[in-house]
Length: 131
Image (tube, rainbow, N blue to C red; front, side, top):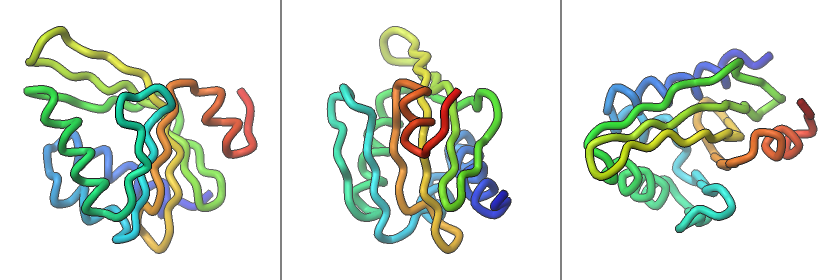
């Protein structure tokens, strides 16, 4: 298991939940790529750390407060890390509880690619695993 890759991903969740977007940004590679889930209103892809951070800021600005709560184990697959989580948002309109799985590609201590899935099984299949 690449513990370093898992730690990078876990640190990104900690930074997000702490509202430390500077630390969150620094955990992303300058050439980062973000792909939101199929069916998401603006799925991207977004290329480059600045574009990725603009999309995350837009998501964050949707709510007065939000958190991401990990569900189950973080799965290490070589240079990729699979994380399932619930994103909870509140404060503007109805509360939201969305279940996502993200496949992160980590290179040299930073997140290079983040691919979001609404279906956990599809995310596992994307890395050659099954439930």
